[in-house]
Length: 130
Image (cartoon, rainbow, N blue to C red; front, side, top):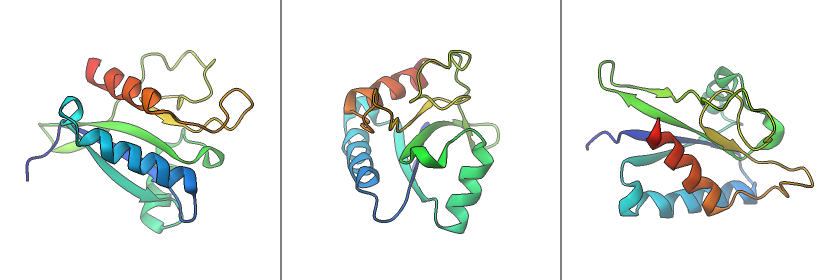
């Protein structure tokens, strides 16, 4: 199986409806031609592996699950690395994880806890542009 250039690392947990919705939206997207360079990796933050990975990211808020970050394959090391967000200085948007390209769920009045397909594609486009 060919390694995809990008990996969407999605964090969720059992019994979380929004996690299920986001998972399905990402699954649908990565099947499309525009996003064929992306694959999804799902981690349950209540599992040991998921929790360790989540904590290592240092920037994600457990109150804002589901969330995802986009990683890019480094051909030299064959490892996926989180893509640093050049807009990280701009903390005005709550749905952007601070340091990396990705999305967290914004449960404030403004965000209503919704991650739309448009938000996902915008984030994937940003990843491709960097």
